Length: 171
Image 1 (cartoon, one colour):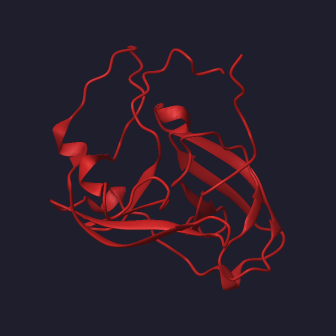
Image 2 (cartoon, rainbow, N blue to C red):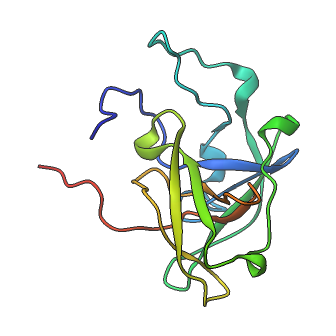
């Protein structure tokens, strides 16, 4: 794994969709455990190789609004309200999947294996026949669950990464 030396301290990715709402995958947190987590929006790599946590980027969950963990049906999300206002430049715009074209390309912004922000580009739409999910060909790893998947044409969120193939084998 190319990022073995990166600092790792999360299991999933989350992103802001409104000034006080954060969205992630439902298998990452739920109504029973959401208060055990904090969200850090803006976990970027420091070119000097050090890490400083800026408390202004840390958000405490105060309310579990809705969520479900049913990956078999392709419904897997958790929506959480946080304790303070999220700056507009950290909020992702969302889009409807009905306007997707078979030629659209996608990218994903996440924290694979709990590392600094990584962007996976050039994802291809493989299937858009289910109203609950899209199937994409895109590079993703453990820890990318909850990542926003964006359309390159609109630069808006079309979905949340919830599953993928086996990617890391211990040994």
